Image (spheres, rainbow, N blue to C red):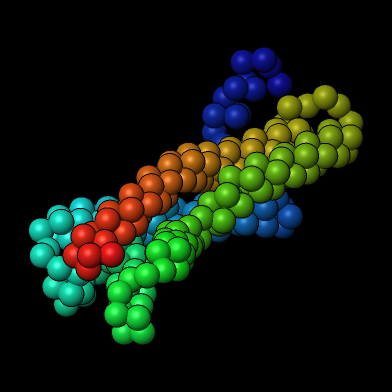
Length: 228
Protein backbone atom coordinates (compact mmCIF):
# COMPACT_ATOMS: atom_id res chain seq x y z
CA UNK A 1 0.00 0.00 0.00
CA UNK A 2 1.42 3.38 -0.98
CA UNK A 3 1.39 6.26 1.48
CA UNK A 4 -1.16 8.08 -0.68
CA UNK A 5 -3.54 5.11 -0.60
CA UNK A 6 -3.82 5.11 3.20
CA UNK A 7 -5.87 8.28 3.59
CA UNK A 8 -8.12 7.18 0.71
CA UNK A 9 -8.92 3.96 2.55
CA UNK A 10 -9.74 5.81 5.73
CA UNK A 11 -11.91 8.37 3.98
CA UNK A 12 -14.05 5.58 2.52
CA UNK A 13 -15.13 4.56 6.03
CA UNK A 14 -18.05 6.56 7.42
CA UNK A 15 -18.76 6.68 11.14
CA UNK A 16 -21.77 4.43 10.63
CA UNK A 17 -19.58 1.90 8.78
CA UNK A 18 -17.17 1.88 11.70
CA UNK A 19 -19.98 1.41 14.21
CA UNK A 20 -21.70 -1.31 12.19
CA UNK A 21 -18.43 -3.25 11.98
CA UNK A 22 -17.87 -3.08 15.72
CA UNK A 23 -17.65 -6.27 17.71
CA UNK A 24 -20.27 -7.08 20.40
CA UNK A 25 -18.43 -5.52 23.34
CA UNK A 26 -17.60 -2.18 21.64
CA UNK A 27 -21.14 -2.10 20.27
CA UNK A 28 -22.48 -2.61 23.79
CA UNK A 29 -20.32 0.25 25.07
CA UNK A 30 -21.64 2.55 22.33
CA UNK A 31 -25.23 1.50 23.06
CA UNK A 32 -24.78 2.26 26.78
CA UNK A 33 -23.34 5.68 25.97
CA UNK A 34 -26.21 6.37 23.59
CA UNK A 35 -28.76 5.47 26.27
CA UNK A 36 -27.00 7.71 28.79
CA UNK A 37 -27.01 10.57 26.28
CA UNK A 38 -30.70 10.18 25.40
CA UNK A 39 -31.73 9.98 29.06
CA UNK A 40 -29.53 12.95 29.91
CA UNK A 41 -31.06 15.15 27.20
CA UNK A 42 -34.54 14.07 28.31
CA UNK A 43 -33.69 15.19 31.85
CA UNK A 44 -32.20 18.45 30.54
CA UNK A 45 -35.37 19.41 28.65
CA UNK A 46 -37.61 18.21 31.47
CA UNK A 47 -35.79 20.26 34.11
CA UNK A 48 -35.67 23.26 31.75
CA UNK A 49 -39.48 23.29 31.56
CA UNK A 50 -39.81 22.78 35.32
CA UNK A 51 -37.48 25.65 36.17
CA UNK A 52 -39.04 27.96 33.57
CA UNK A 53 -42.52 27.33 34.96
CA UNK A 54 -41.29 27.76 38.53
CA UNK A 55 -39.67 31.12 37.79
CA UNK A 56 -42.74 32.43 35.95
CA UNK A 57 -45.15 31.18 38.63
CA UNK A 58 -42.98 32.64 41.42
CA UNK A 59 -43.03 36.07 39.81
CA UNK A 60 -46.83 35.98 39.37
CA UNK A 61 -47.41 34.71 42.89
CA UNK A 62 -45.13 37.30 44.49
CA UNK A 63 -46.93 40.15 42.72
CA UNK A 64 -50.29 38.82 43.88
CA UNK A 65 -49.02 38.29 47.45
CA UNK A 66 -47.79 41.86 47.72
CA UNK A 67 -51.11 43.20 46.41
CA UNK A 68 -53.19 40.98 48.70
CA UNK A 69 -54.81 42.72 51.64
CA UNK A 70 -54.72 39.76 54.02
CA UNK A 71 -53.25 36.28 54.28
CA UNK A 72 -56.76 34.83 54.09
CA UNK A 73 -57.38 36.51 50.76
CA UNK A 74 -54.13 35.14 49.39
CA UNK A 75 -54.90 31.67 50.72
CA UNK A 76 -58.19 31.57 48.81
CA UNK A 77 -56.38 32.30 45.52
CA UNK A 78 -53.21 30.25 45.98
CA UNK A 79 -54.38 27.40 43.72
CA UNK A 80 -54.26 29.75 40.74
CA UNK A 81 -50.47 29.88 40.89
CA UNK A 82 -49.53 26.21 40.46
CA UNK A 83 -46.83 25.03 40.00
CA UNK A 84 -45.15 27.57 42.24
CA UNK A 85 -42.50 26.94 44.93
CA UNK A 86 -43.49 30.14 46.74
CA UNK A 87 -47.11 28.98 46.88
CA UNK A 88 -46.04 25.83 48.70
CA UNK A 89 -43.99 27.85 51.19
CA UNK A 90 -46.98 30.14 51.69
CA UNK A 91 -49.29 27.19 52.37
CA UNK A 92 -46.91 25.76 54.98
CA UNK A 93 -46.70 29.15 56.70
CA UNK A 94 -50.41 29.87 56.46
CA UNK A 95 -51.35 26.50 57.95
CA UNK A 96 -49.03 27.14 60.90
CA UNK A 97 -50.46 30.62 61.37
CA UNK A 98 -54.03 29.24 61.29
CA UNK A 99 -53.07 26.49 63.76
CA UNK A 100 -51.55 28.92 66.24
CA UNK A 101 -54.50 31.33 65.99
CA UNK A 102 -56.94 28.48 66.51
CA UNK A 103 -55.09 27.26 69.61
CA UNK A 104 -53.84 30.51 71.14
CA UNK A 105 -55.72 33.33 69.43
CA UNK A 106 -52.48 34.78 68.09
CA UNK A 107 -49.18 33.84 66.46
CA UNK A 108 -47.09 33.55 69.58
CA UNK A 109 -44.50 31.00 68.51
CA UNK A 110 -42.40 32.70 65.83
CA UNK A 111 -39.76 29.96 65.97
CA UNK A 112 -42.32 27.29 65.06
CA UNK A 113 -43.52 29.43 62.14
CA UNK A 114 -39.95 29.88 60.89
CA UNK A 115 -39.33 26.14 61.09
CA UNK A 116 -42.56 25.42 59.22
CA UNK A 117 -41.58 27.82 56.45
CA UNK A 118 -38.19 26.11 56.28
CA UNK A 119 -39.91 22.75 55.86
CA UNK A 120 -41.86 24.14 52.91
CA UNK A 121 -38.64 25.41 51.35
CA UNK A 122 -36.94 22.06 51.85
CA UNK A 123 -39.83 20.22 50.21
CA UNK A 124 -39.73 22.47 47.16
CA UNK A 125 -35.94 22.26 46.87
CA UNK A 126 -36.21 18.48 46.92
CA UNK A 127 -38.66 18.66 44.00
CA UNK A 128 -36.39 20.99 42.06
CA UNK A 129 -33.37 18.75 42.62
CA UNK A 130 -35.22 15.64 41.42
CA UNK A 131 -33.32 13.80 38.65
CA UNK A 132 -30.34 16.13 38.98
CA UNK A 133 -28.32 13.16 40.22
CA UNK A 134 -28.79 11.57 36.79
CA UNK A 135 -27.03 14.51 35.12
CA UNK A 136 -24.23 14.29 37.67
CA UNK A 137 -23.90 10.54 37.09
CA UNK A 138 -23.83 10.99 33.31
CA UNK A 139 -21.17 13.71 33.54
CA UNK A 140 -19.05 11.55 35.83
CA UNK A 141 -19.47 8.04 34.46
CA UNK A 142 -19.71 8.33 30.67
CA UNK A 143 -16.10 9.51 30.13
CA UNK A 144 -14.91 6.36 31.91
CA UNK A 145 -17.26 4.17 29.88
CA UNK A 146 -15.87 5.82 26.75
CA UNK A 147 -12.36 5.26 28.08
CA UNK A 148 -13.15 1.59 28.54
CA UNK A 149 -14.25 1.43 24.91
CA UNK A 150 -11.04 3.22 23.92
CA UNK A 151 -8.85 0.76 25.78
CA UNK A 152 -10.74 -2.19 24.35
CA UNK A 153 -10.41 -0.77 20.82
CA UNK A 154 -6.66 -0.33 21.25
CA UNK A 155 -6.34 -3.91 22.52
CA UNK A 156 -8.31 -5.11 19.51
CA UNK A 157 -6.13 -3.02 17.22
CA UNK A 158 -2.95 -4.60 18.55
CA UNK A 159 -4.46 -8.04 18.20
CA UNK A 160 -5.26 -7.25 14.56
CA UNK A 161 -1.74 -6.01 14.09
CA UNK A 162 -0.31 -9.24 15.47
CA UNK A 163 -2.55 -11.39 13.28
CA UNK A 164 -1.62 -9.39 10.18
CA UNK A 165 2.04 -9.97 10.87
CA UNK A 166 3.02 -6.50 9.74
CA UNK A 167 2.54 -2.89 10.74
CA UNK A 168 -0.38 -2.46 8.37
CA UNK A 169 -2.75 0.43 8.93
CA UNK A 170 -5.55 -1.68 7.44
CA UNK A 171 -5.07 -4.12 10.31
CA UNK A 172 -5.18 -1.56 13.12
CA UNK A 173 -7.56 1.05 11.70
CA UNK A 174 -10.87 -0.65 12.71
CA UNK A 175 -9.85 -1.02 16.35
CA UNK A 176 -8.50 2.52 16.55
CA UNK A 177 -11.66 3.86 14.91
CA UNK A 178 -13.84 2.06 17.43
CA UNK A 179 -11.69 3.44 20.23
CA UNK A 180 -12.00 7.01 18.97
CA UNK A 181 -15.75 6.72 18.46
CA UNK A 182 -16.21 5.46 22.03
CA UNK A 183 -14.16 8.37 23.34
CA UNK A 184 -16.15 10.87 21.28
CA UNK A 185 -19.50 9.47 22.40
CA UNK A 186 -18.41 9.44 26.02
CA UNK A 187 -17.48 13.12 25.81
CA UNK A 188 -20.62 13.96 23.83
CA UNK A 189 -22.72 12.51 26.63
CA UNK A 190 -20.68 13.96 29.50
CA UNK A 191 -20.10 17.55 28.37
CA UNK A 192 -23.76 18.66 28.03
CA UNK A 193 -24.66 16.85 31.26
CA UNK A 194 -21.88 18.65 33.14
CA UNK A 195 -22.78 22.05 31.66
CA UNK A 196 -26.47 21.81 32.47
CA UNK A 197 -25.85 20.25 35.89
CA UNK A 198 -23.78 23.28 36.87
CA UNK A 199 -26.24 25.72 35.29
CA UNK A 200 -29.28 24.12 36.90
CA UNK A 201 -27.47 24.09 40.23
CA UNK A 202 -27.21 27.88 39.91
CA UNK A 203 -30.93 28.09 39.04
CA UNK A 204 -31.88 25.98 42.07
CA UNK A 205 -29.78 28.15 44.37
CA UNK A 206 -31.42 31.24 42.89
CA UNK A 207 -34.93 29.87 43.47
CA UNK A 208 -33.88 28.80 46.96
CA UNK A 209 -32.75 32.34 47.71
CA UNK A 210 -36.10 33.66 46.48
CA UNK A 211 -37.87 31.28 48.85
CA UNK A 212 -35.69 32.43 51.76
CA UNK A 213 -36.54 36.04 50.98
CA UNK A 214 -40.22 35.19 50.70
CA UNK A 215 -40.10 33.44 54.07
CA UNK A 216 -38.90 36.67 55.67
CA UNK A 217 -41.55 38.63 53.80
CA UNK A 218 -44.23 36.20 55.01
CA UNK A 219 -43.10 36.63 58.60
CA UNK A 220 -43.27 40.42 58.30
CA UNK A 221 -46.70 40.28 56.65
CA UNK A 222 -48.09 37.92 59.27
CA UNK A 223 -46.84 40.19 62.08
CA UNK A 224 -48.36 43.29 60.50
CA UNK A 225 -51.70 41.76 59.54
CA UNK A 226 -52.18 39.91 62.83
CA UNK A 227 -50.58 42.41 65.11
CA UNK A 228 -48.07 39.80 66.35
